[in-house]
Length: 140
Ligand SMILES: [Zn+2]
Image (cartoon, rainbow, N blue to C red; front, side):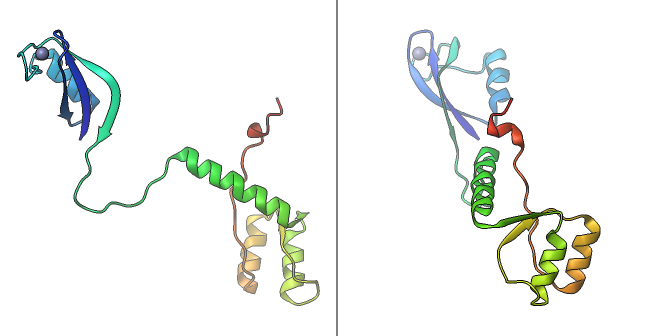
């Protein structure tokens, strides 16, 4: 359910609930929208204030895609700042650390599917992270 502030031809402003945005257009077309004050069916959306009715049940937490993109970007930036880029040698370096041949440290790099499988088989823990697109860096 969403609510729109509606305004009639005589300037009365009132709220009305709709199932969705299309429901407003539908009811308006059918002349079913009426001002509760003067009964005018000449009704328009007054302001772009859109409120969403809160249901009683608890829903899952949600964030917009932009928020996730921002988080991924910040996360990736942090990873870049605090880890060593070993590039395609990631699997080899991770294994060396796993077997104590190399100093344990934060590394990042790229790994092929085969390398990932091999690391998993060896019990090496790692995380796959989405890499933000280069477009955001502003290099056109
Ligand atoms: Zn009115």
